[in-house]
Amino acid sequence: MPEIILIDDPADPRVAAYRDVRERDLVGREGLFVAEGEVVLNVLARSTLCEPASLMIARKRVAGLADLIARLPEDVPVYSASQEAMDAVVGFHIHRGILALGRRRAPASAADMLAGLGEGALVLALSGIANHDNMGGLFRNAAAFGVDAVLLDTDCCDPLYRKAIRVSVGAVLVTPFATAQGDLLEVLTAAGFETVALSPGGATRLVDLKRPSKAAVLLGAEGPGLAASVLARATTVAIPMATGFDSLNVATTGGIVLHHLAFAALRD
Amino acid sequence: MPEIILIDDPADPRVAAYRDVRERDLVGREGLFVAEGEVVLNVLARSTLCEPASLMIARKRVAGLADLIARLPEDVPVYSASQEAMDAVVGFHIHRGILALGRRRAPASAADMLAGLGEGALVLALSGIANHDNMGGLFRNAAAFGVDAVLLDTDCCDPLYRKAIRVSVGAVLVTPFATAQGDLLEVLTAAGFETVALSPGGATRLVDLKRPSKAAVLLGAEGPGLAASVLARATTVAIPMATGFDSLNVATTGGIVLHHLAFAALRD
Image (cartoon, rainbow over all chains, first blue to last red; front, side, top):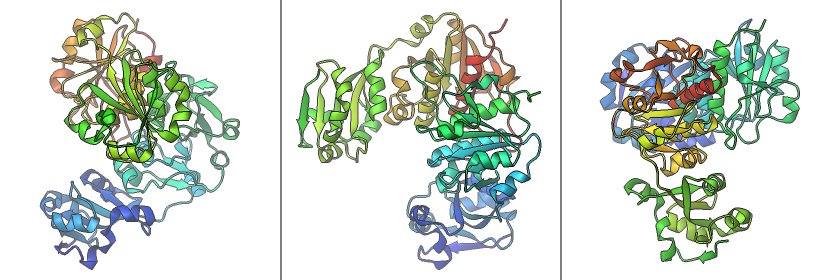
């Protein structure tokens, strides 16, 4: 069980990595990410893809987290800080009093990640998802419906941004993901996946879609959507909507499509 | 076409209703709501349920909104403010430069709203949805899938809160809604609706659900969910999820259920 280290001085160098969390979100986190709250911390503790680097807990919360702390590796420092010191270090009020720094264990490349997936695999492919709420929501839905991996293009934001982790309820920490440098469709096709691309003008209604044996769902950002050059090369699917209000949030769209594919018949 | 009224002094009494928007969100808006942005303003302008009381537009945006302004009733004041005056009045930076105050036209009671719906109607019933993001997302999904009305209980937040309107992309302004004072199930049953209640322990998988001829979908808040006493009296439905991660956002859940019902076969 890790030792509990008391912190009462916000200037204590041992918690320097927690200083000015919001600022670090913007300027780079040096390979670390910030996880908030008990639910996410529990996900981090059981993740095989990520590991905690340290914890900072408001002193009044430490006893309640004893079981979780006991399961952490011996060498993970657990800082028990007064709420005042914690707020002062982080730069804003940490209402829940629970923060962790984590890092990914050696992540696979996009090609290696996809190569490890066989028949029946389901991949979520995201193009240009720049909003952290949407990114978090998409991962949450991916985890709920058993997606095997998430593939991102270089126009996506970082899923390990603090808010994306929080909105994902930790799904970002337990779902394999990788960024492809090139065209997502090419990468998926090369790995033997059939890609279903969502578009308001899609050729097939979602309810009529059968599940390919190795299926990728490709979503673009709300507004611009996917490029015509991409749609021309994929199986395109639409979610018909009420006239005059054809607008769904991209994370909700992902949830609807993944729910359908999770229960749709496999194609003959 | 309304007259354009120039505002350069933040203390101008004609724009007093826009003063300290955030504060008004908290203390009450005297029957008015605040709509932000061009998309929502367009929805407001064509709503039959709500009407604009006035507009405040950053001067540089006025020309681009000429068509919309021309369609407004003659007696709706349109204030063209300098960005500085607008920010000073409102109390924060209005990035998009477009605000409107609106009010609902005489809303129906819950009983009257439901009594007006016949066979094939689809109602979304919400219990204890206190988060404005979720409320907005639920209305957005309701509008996308042609929900006829939204029924709220007294534990729900106000859908006409500024953020809920924004997240709904204006759906709150064009979807009939009413708050029932008592038990939602009783109110729905009295109006001839069969209620489908979502619960992780639901008896039927969503994919197997057929659509009742007058259907209500009942959702509770994430976390507590619906009370056992409610579930005992309704048709309960579950969305099966991957083991170890049985968590969906309530608005996403609503989207998945409404998409299913919009395309599911009617029950024999």
